[in-house]
Length: 129
Image 1: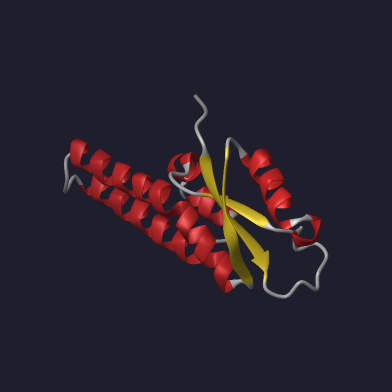
Image 2: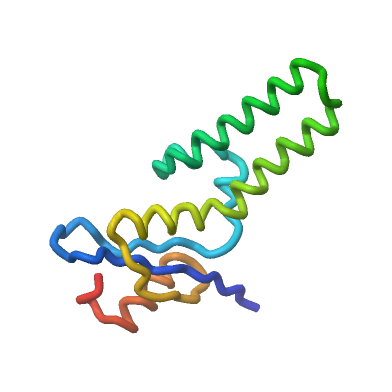
């Protein structure tokens, strides 16, 4: 049985630059954002999210060093930060794209990113790319 993944397709509102190809952002949980948190947000230039995640992790680290909370509480808080990044990471990326001149052109369901790109081209033609 095949598992379909959903991707939102983002096209530039103004089609002038040739290098502005459609971008595909996967719906759902982002494992890379979950594991790498601050590095993932920095890589995607999500500056506000990077600052918020770094501040949260530094605060949790400070709580751990002050022995204000126990080790289990610290782990639960740190896990909450990582799960939040995993759950919201792709949504933060979509929001950044919408503010950066991209509009959502549609949603594509496919087995992987390559099939999603092919399906989008089949549906909208090569002119959309």
